[in-house]
Length: 96
Image 1 (cartoon, one colour):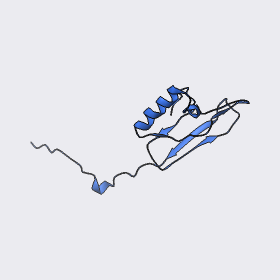
Image 2 (image 1 turned 90 degrees about the vertical axis):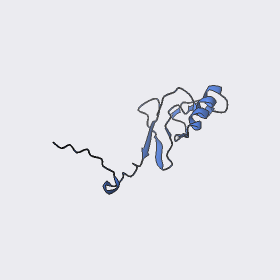
Image 3 (image 1 turned 180 degrees about the vertical axis):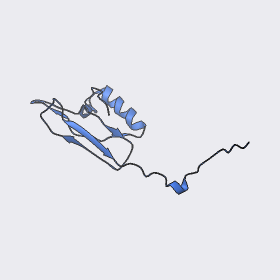
Image 4 (image 1 turned 135 degrees about the horizontal axis):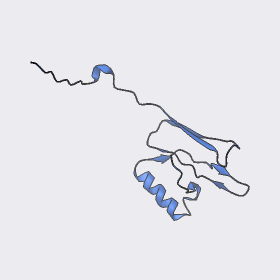
């Protein structure tokens, strides 16, 4: 998550935004919020960012008039933990 003050909707016209996204993508991350997160009478911006490198996620925008921007959320499934039977335990025994 971040608040980079970059409007991702201007990725093709603003050099700093283009460079920023290329950097994010080069590390294997993608943006999960792709629609505007702030609407005004004459503009729309995507200034709230969430990035992930997982493929199975749920993300979205919560449309509300409580704040200047809409809320954003991201839900990801927890990875399965290694079953106890396959965990290698090491111990050191001390004797007299």
